[in-house]
Amino acid sequence: MPYHPRRGDVRAVLVESDPRNAGVACRAAAGYGLSQVEVRQSDASLAASFADALPADVLLLCGIFGNVSDRDIKRTVHAAPALCRCGATVIWTRHRRPPDLTPQIRAWFAESGLDELAFDALETSSLTSVGVHRLSRTAPARPPSHRLFTFITT
Image 1 (cartoon, rainbow, N blue to C red):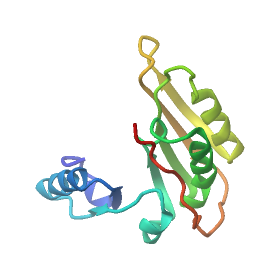
Image 2: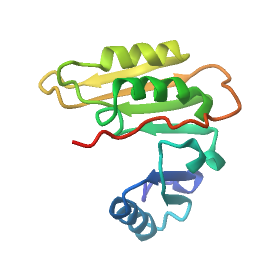
Image 3: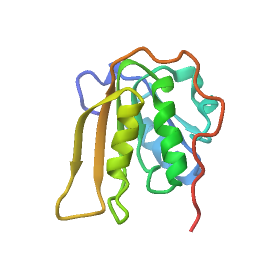
């Protein structure tokens, strides 16, 4: 994005709880002159942390689904429409180690009214998959007030 001709058209709010990661992201955005990219050191599991940036045109749920319970994944997927504008794109990631939960995650997105645009998983690796979905309906106007997920510490 730093060299893209339409980079100024993008407004992004990135939410990261780890102060080191947030610092790296903040310095990178500043270093590339991306003043419209805001990095917040906050709890991304609470929509209140980014409610002023909603509804989103693009929602990234990356680095979450491999680190939370199945129940929390389902809760987050079902909440996604309330975080998005009609026509928004949701991008998510998850490993495919057994038991591979990606088929169920894809079904939860479908249940939630998000159409699958793509699902990419390398056949040579059970470690990477990326799903892309689009919200094709108007969603509830209010983001959820409950915690969406809790990271599992190992």
